[in-house]
Length: 216
Length: 216
Image (cartoon, rainbow over all chains, first blue to last red; front, side):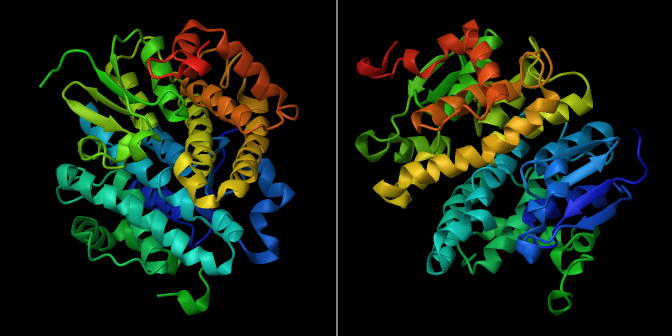
């Protein structure tokens, strides 16, 4: 069952896929990308083949070590437990709790409310205000949390799982035209993160399935 | 900073609060409950005092070991790391990944879409169909996942964090009148869980803030 290279089912613009791409890059794990286009063909995530891999019909999913794991944070925690270097969680349990709290704040508290499948239900004219409201509500909280946890990055001076959630969520915020002026800590950390090699190579504008007009 | 008893900020009907109450009960951790009523006084979670504790304005939050942690799964992972007995995660990393995948499927994939703050946006007549759709979509996936991971409980024969997410989500499903007939595995596991002492004492119908007419 030990397969060769891990295979990541990914969509260039999916913020949850990006989280995992950063983790793979930081840990130096060689992998193949299998692009799943979330709107083409009515959504390739709805195909029978993909549903058999991930019944949630969502990206990312990672085929690794003979199993397929869905849910980005579950994937990152698995990578952390099986490939611990460099670490994406601090040693201290209280700092680990801060990392997971921030990760969940984004992964359960913001992203699900502004993802494609929810927005499709909203009707065209309501999509932007709905997404903005979800992100602003979450960022108001996140900015306050970060003021007590952040150093150079979300928790202290070490890149952690929380940072893997932050940068992709800021990219979504920019896509939905959220004014980031009220969030100086979020903005500063995001800028620092985007300069890192692992965040650059995994960026939505540099994926095999990135459309030509969005490449950079 | 080591305080006395942990304090759980909880609302009897909040499924996320119930997850943490089960964890505390299973691990035999003595704690105090501070009820936060999510609708009274315009929502007590919006008070300045509570926002200072949890900027997300959500329950649960747990004050423990001199810190306050928000986000139910982050709390449970912290309890697991600092009070490991009995374990809520298996030893094997692949099984741990299954537990976390199922937990996130519920905590990020279902619950946020049917929680009170989202439903309030929907308008009265749309609330029930919206919540039902979110739960049915998630349970369709969850039933398939469980068919390959479940033993007596969600992952094998040991109660895990996944089960702490499952029973409260089934309670929400029942509250929103979702037909559970298509979900025999979910229903079977839920029934087994509800018979356990830790799930009984932490149940929404037995909390200090449970209204008299809902007590059992």
